[in-house]
Image (cartoon, rainbow, N blue to C red):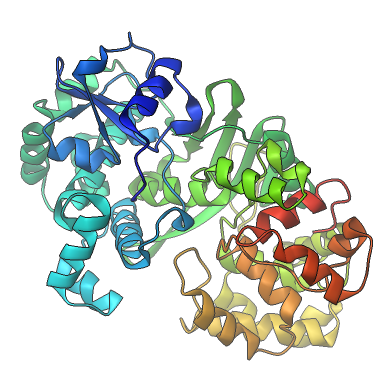
Amino acid sequence: MACMLPDADAAYLALAARDARFDGRFFVGVTSTGIYCRPVCRVRTPRRENCRFFASPAQAEAAAFRPCLKCRPEIAPGLSAMDSSDALATAAARAIEAAVQAGEPLALPALAARLGVGERHLRRIFGAAHGVAPRDYLTTQRLLLAKQLLTDTTLPVAQVALASGFESLRRFNAAFAGQYRLAPTRLRRAGGQAPAETALRLAWRPPYDVAAMLGFAARRALAGVEQVEGPVWRRTVRWPWRGQPLDGWIACRFVPERHELHLLAAPALAPVLGALLRRVRETFDLDCDPAPIAAALLEGGLAAAADGTRLPGAFDGFETAVRIVLGQQVTVAAANTLAARLVRRWGRPLATPFPALDRLFPDAATLAAADPEELGRLGLVRQRVRALQALATEVAAGRIRLERGAPLAPTLAALGELPGFGPWTLQLIALRVLGWPDAWPVGDAGLAQALGTRENRKIETAAEAWRPWRAYAAMALWRHGDTR
């Protein structure tokens, strides 16, 4: 994703200090070695005259630099959608990354058509924003994902090639050797034996309020589906792959001293590891750049947001939207109780190594087909039943997509046509599910309490100072008297 490079001398100072706040915001190519690194790399700081600075791994690789095997540029945090002034180029980059991580093919003409522009125009806009052609960006993303899977897992090389979006092992070997001057099998030998479990590392930029994120998750941990135990968050997973669902579990361990999150996944989920990596990044807002957010909120008088506030995302968008509906006008604990009853009645059993995890959340088709009377007997009022089943019907039919990357305005407009979906529900879905950084849950009791007034006009006026980061302001205000 595009970003503005700092001044080269400032970038070198950040490199010399190994300043984690700049991780993923630039990369340094060292001409004496032909290798490019993250600014947090622990090797000896190169001489200033040997450094070239790039905005992305794709730019570094286009200049013939190879990724460092020690700091591993593939695990650096990315950039959020708000970091780029060019929405089209950002949307294209995100679409490329999503396709790579899902292991899906992506043709440039199809991408241009999806974005509503011509292929030539897309190449021009993309090159101006990212410094490389879309095809080169795509190749770099595929190879970096492959490099991470080769380093952190024991997946066979052929399966790594497939999971990274290459059509054949031959093409993968040729691309990897041509770009990195190293055979995939040789990289695995150089890195030593990968752990028996599928373990993947993801980095973030500090500060990050890990305690607040884990506390938020713990208060909402859904019995049978989720668990928070110390620094570890676990959940059950059902993920589509080639027309069939893959069932398993994931476990995410926060490692604050390294500014990293370590992901373990059930072996059955190996074909979709790229997609899981992306979803975990979104769930825990790992690509956030906290500096501009903190500056804006501090300027607006909200000091509580300066210590690494993040937006808790949605690992499963439909599940989170259902739980938001269940949470209308009730406490978090009451909403959890209702959601747990849904899981016990309609969730599919799943065997896992963790006694607390034994169910999958019911999918949209299951809840759309459920008997409304039976839903009511779980404690849902008739209005909630109608709202829940209307949502499930639209999602099951594919008319509403609940995930990052779904178009904000059309998605909220479609949801707004459903019974029981008012402004508060829509804005909370925008915040949690769609990841909109300026979402503001109108009429929320917790925000009213934190701001000391129930007058919506005064609340809206106060929130204007925090645009375009009102969602982060809401998280900071909720922190002490958590109601959402």
